[in-house]
Length: 139
Image 1 (tube, helix red, strand yellow):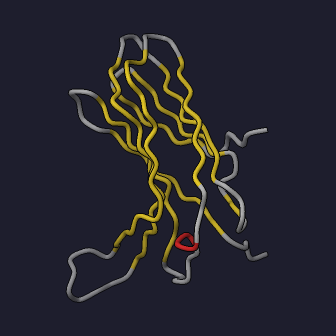
Image 2: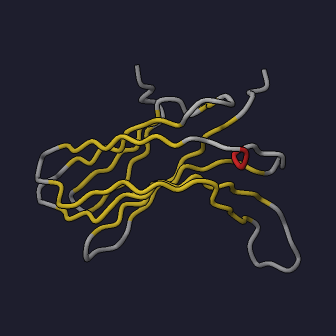
Image 3: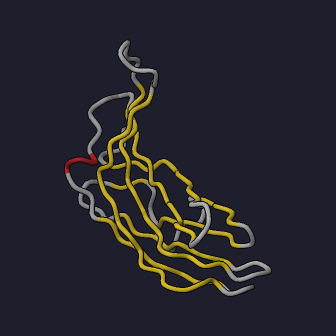
């Protein structure tokens, strides 16, 4: 059974993209599994590929920086997608990302983000991101 409460939506013209993660709260040793859904709208949309990134995002004030957030990629996966999403059709692309020691957060101001980037052919790339957790959950 998949947990549909972890749903991220990206709108691309007439295409809707949803990333559904089976378990957004992972214990050590578990794998990040999910499905990217591409729902066609009223017209066809050409997609080059879909990129999934797990980012460690840290909020930290630094005098030598104009930014209060800095990010470090800890995992990346490309989902090949040659062709288009046809009007009113749904295409599903499953993914699996295996965590490693870089996913463990030691800074209390850090969090993990799953970023989905859809590379649209001859168009503007669209992205969405949602928080995930990895490691022991304090009760």
